[in-house]
Length: 329
Image 1 (spheres, rainbow, N blue to C red):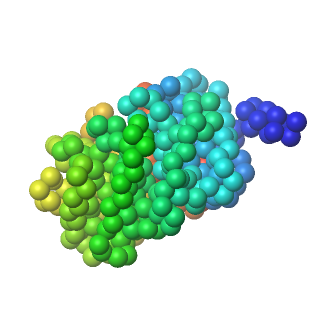
Image 2: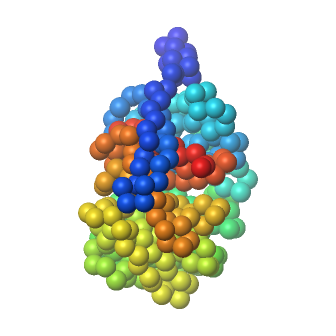
């Protein structure tokens, strides 16, 4: 009865809706940002992705749950569903594979789990103790790759063959936190404390590329225009590109005292920069003109940003457990 009541309460939860006019002080551009307030505050809203069924999926690590948000339809109709994961499991990385299967890292208990669209766990894969699986990515061949933030390792999991491979990072502390497929068929990852962008081949050969900015704290890396990998630097207050041969170009964010979090590139090749300080999202057009969106919420400490259905931008707020949304305009 208690479980049923829990589902009813959260399935029918009325989401607190916030909107604001966000103005760029320099360019004078005005756009509207909406926010979804997730109940059960613990300050731990992390990764976000768009699902093939048209919903947005979010991980909340301390709450040990996923959040599914209806992405289509009028803003006033958007509803969320809270999906419990195992107690104290710490879900963080989240990704869909080419078959439409949803995968999540359970960082606190060293597991990777497959989740059905109904939110139920369908399979679990145990990883070496102390690995701390954090970031999650899927290669072009369907193999799952993950970063061991605590264990300073990169892992490869072939779920169809139930085969696990572990590749240790020689430099310490490295703290790998993010991994994504590249144009070259390899997987690329960031070392938060190593200040490196890394590349690992299917055979497990690792190459590290040191960033020009010392202690830059790279956050995300992903494939983008020009056949390049794009990345962000938290402490370096910059974003940049790296070629398959390791040529790196850094671009200052243009925001004084800024600390970048995630980034994403939309269909028009605008790069959207998300900051954990200050409370803004900044769009850089291909011609380098910029537009800044001020969040209604202060002290948000944003974490990840992505493109959802219809080209809308979705962003997570770690400290405030909210989701920001910018519609096409």
